[in-house]
Length: 349
Image (tube, rainbow, N blue to C red; front, side, top):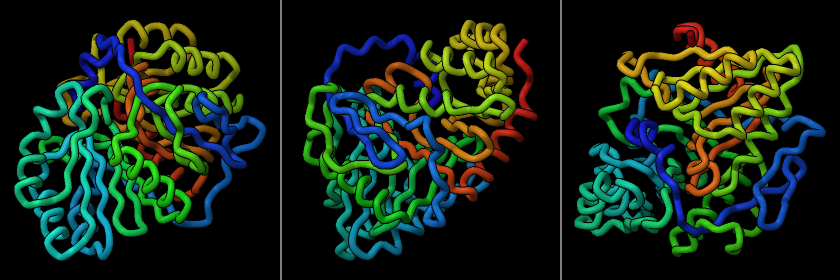
């Protein structure tokens, strides 16, 4: 969590692996390239199937509750897991015959952090696997039967009360199928960080996967229209490509607002953004809240929410998952939260 924000930009990853592409009426599918959002028309709003909730207000009890009601499957991908109530719910679901499978990150310091949860689950005969040590699996996704939750936060109770995050509840059948397909590929050990590995076929829709998600996020930012407001918050600011896109939006007349937790690692980036007309507000690292969410709102009508940070590691190498949607209910929650977070933060000097 916060340990990544402090030193992720120092990591030079000489690793290989795979990626997932996306493509339908909202996306262009490019072989061995990242998924891209079309700029010719906005992502349409979905009539239903999506809800968003902000953390810490919403809380994480929904995870154990959802697992306790599972009838067929519980598939969890988690960067950090230490919540004992979640672990107990997973074990109980396994005992009543539910197909419970858990993928835990083992890269970076993930193995040491997740070892206790791994041991406990394994001792209870729950199917749990480590992801490859060559790839940081920063994804946070819960799949219960035909219901998925895409989270920006980890299942780590010590941060529940302070970490600003989002949870997107997704019951759209296509999204659920795509998340399930990606899970099975990774469960079978096909997670690799190279654009030349075989992509998962048939994934499309509003989901956005890493590796290779940078172009998608840039294309989304590029859709912000002059005279509108672009709101974004993130844990990291370590991508010149993202910075350039935000600055370009400001130059073409978009009111660009960035809210983050202050860190001297990002000071130079903040200075550059402000010099180019971007409004940056920050919370002290020691404030009661910590900006951990990764979200973008453009044109008051489209949002991105997911696990992808503004860093080369997160966008190009890691396994990540997010969603881009025009669902009005999701847009309203994310936009209101980001506006409040920005207003309560201190403008960058």
